[in-house]
Image (cartoon, rainbow, N blue to C red; front, side, top):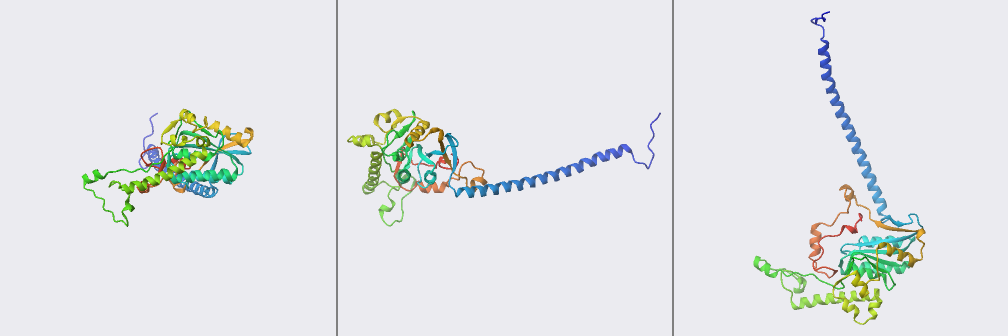
Length: 359
């Protein structure tokens, strides 16, 4: 049978199907776009709610201090050994280390402290500030303090380590630790000849010639050098007194501290031979010693450490590290003459992130 021919004036079935097939995708694209728009709006609203909740969470907990993190031994132990971490250059006293000290002071469950040091040192004032508050914490709370040295505990790092006092067997160094560097330095760079070649002349307006002492565009005068040397000598005497308090055996031997206070860095083996440290061991060995000194039971002791809370800027930037000081602040800080308990001839150029909330 022949197929029926198309009658004029009646719709072509194939044409209708074809038109419908074209119409459906157009409606489908619009529907999909509308659906995607709704999803985007929903996700944005959800993200804003999560961010708002995170800000409230951070703001609420920031008032309570640092967050506490489980480290080892009995997770739910009723006693705590707190690890206070000193990592990187020591450039400020009122920083992450001080916050950890304050956190320990407020927690009556903490029965002993392990100071984890991995630092080349830093400014005289910052190192002495941390040393003072560690000593004050241990004396007020009657807490035993044990030091665990990491890769480096030199100069200001060693200075702070002396907070252990005269307790026996409390200074642990890892096999590859560098420590010591007992000394003081005020960095100064003389670029006067280079400045003269470039036609740069120091012409500051000052109240007294000594106001600009330390300016790298001119040579130090004998008077300026004598003044700076006096500042170094005074800080150096303080350093040796602190070492004598923390290492009474060294102080008992006439001239021993003087012979070791050359700024030299010592390996662990050398430091053991000289009496600069007590034992070779890792942080777990220092923890065991702290537990022993505090008379605790390992099965009832939880070892914890601290983290800081991120700021709003950190959350907005989705950063895992806290916001750092601007380059301008760092540059201005570097132009200020100051003494360092620091194992280097170059002053620090950046601040460590290890004192922030990430580590």
